[in-house]
Length: 322
Image 1 (cartoon, helix red, strand yellow):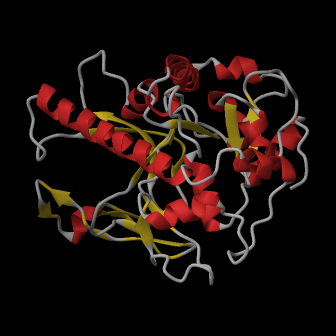
Image 2 (image 1 turned 180 degrees about the vertical axis):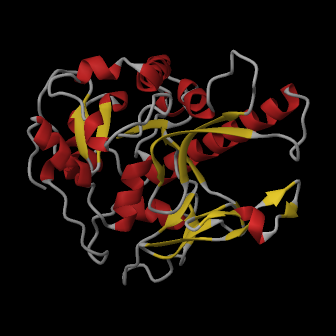
């Protein structure tokens, strides 16, 4: 499927547009040009959407190259492929591109890696994917619509696009009447199908977005206060309840061993680079990106992009060097 916004090469994002449409008909140029610096367009292609605050088990991803494993498939490979079992048994094997991790993080990972890590991840990825499909299908049926007439409501936070050109938002069925059901993001968290992945400042799409992003930096020592507010607070409660009940990824007999973002950075051979704010205490410091695991419960981790860390330092937070 053609994408309206894409990355033809890493680091370069481009979009594709058409002259604006009205009831499916292209409008004349004198209608779509508002003034000398504003035009109205329609997307030429589909938008990718990345749900905010959640991280689902991968169903396919790209394996790193290694002379020891010339049979590894090129491009994206299904997580159920035997190559993933081999890789996640020992992703630190000699021959892969270098990945330098601190000893504490390496030990944390080694305790959960092994020959069962790949099949475990694959087993959780299928239900998460099917759950979202079922939620959308159920909404179509409940509203008496079809796949052609069904519409989505997108709620944005501070950042609109990610590095891959995907829209960043909370997604729900479009419904004028209130109350609306929870967004798919929250429904998935409540059922335990996805792990939380809260990345500042995209933590609450239902607040007025005004001023500079620096104005949204919380005060040092205020983590517990912000942790209970708005969409972030609701999402954290959903995760805690699902985890304590042993739902989905948190099932007591076979919990998800390797978190999705961990699988990605291991495969990409790129150490984690987001700082972490512990939402469970009133500390005045950000944790080093490779210390995220020291925050025991995943719903208590608020990730901070490295480019935003100086804003926290200016506000009075202690920020360790990378």
